[in-house]
Length: 429
Image 1 (cartoon, helix red, strand yellow):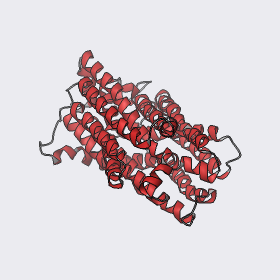
Image 2: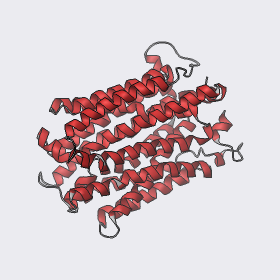
Image 3: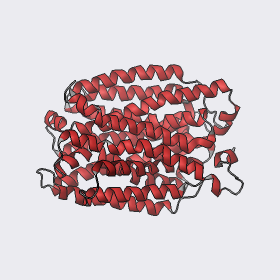
Image 4: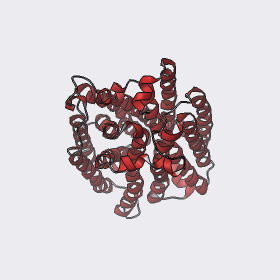
């Protein structure tokens, strides 16, 4: 049966169970985002512990995105076939193991740990959206997606402003990772107990392992899926690479800001996501239009990024960081669109597909950006000029995303011929 049929036909108790499980999954998404961004405030420690230069640190941190993108495909297929009760806790345990390995302090352990963190974290957002689709009213899908990402970016902000002082005064950076792993194990147990066992029954498809991936044939044969993935991926880059990896070094080495101030300023970007994701999601639902909100948010990103890079004294960095984060909330709108341009029974796989496309871009470009910075700095200290030249690629990516957005199908309720204030999901159900 379809996702909408499950949501409407289930008893209130079962729907409430999925809603509660979604709340727990938000904690998972918060935690994995904190682990994703935490290395950005540990670069001096990581450089010293592993004997790495800027290129090496970028490559180590970027390992996360390789397995995240690959396991996004697996996560979507597993959720569609097996349901969330066992799949999501398995992802949490993988993330926990990765955190513990990273904290052991060896170079090999750090690499394996970062790979495991990425693999396990791929189940967080996909799982949260799956649970929200089953437990919440369909008319609020874009709002729920935005609120989910809001929670994640709150974790991303905490991974900088909270972890920075923590590992420079309370505990060591290794202890942070070990304790995080233990906390994730506890969370895995909680979400296993809270998640209902029910899930979608497939209309068709065999019982073999390969048949789990059959829904991707539907999703990936739709050109709109690629437009959604690449548009969102390009809008993610200023945060996944620009801020979470190189935001603090840009402020410290490029602009000469002291460490504490640099961390505080860098956290404004994910804090802006906390505001922008639910706000832009709500606007897209309220207006019944996806594309104008998506394009408007991207334009805000373009202005904030350009001013920060090329006119750094024109506006306060706190304000520009917050504005960049708010505009970046537009990157979540294609996540709602891809669900609306594909059939109901492949919604989990649609989320997996867009996550794969989004984070494949980050996986490929993170080491390239690090190499470019290293090359432009001639192997020495990073300079403002190196950041400005490298940052031009991010600016071009935003412009390309805006161009792609014009070719997306408008799936908002106001564009539906049968709708008078009724959402596309209700019309489809």
